[in-house]
Length: 78
Image (tube, rainbow, N blue to C red; front, side):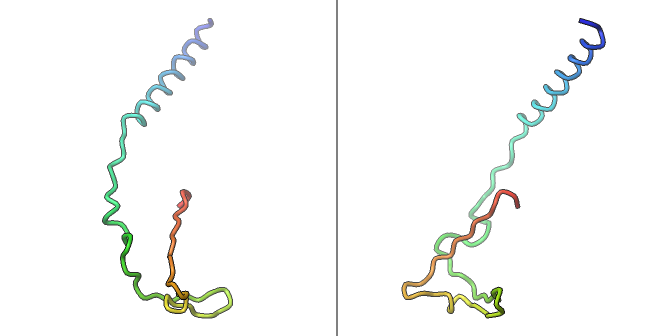
């Protein structure tokens, strides 16, 4: 192989090894989810919001005959 090609390949291998090694060695700290947001079974605080038609909705106005189930989905893009 020509010397410049060997040098370029060696640099690429070193760059990849350093890049992957650095990411593999870093472990994220564990997250204590018991301290983030409302927990399962928690009472929902009073809230109100306006819909696209200008009508105000509250928790009470959203309840059906058997109550309500609130679901929050946090996308991975946030």
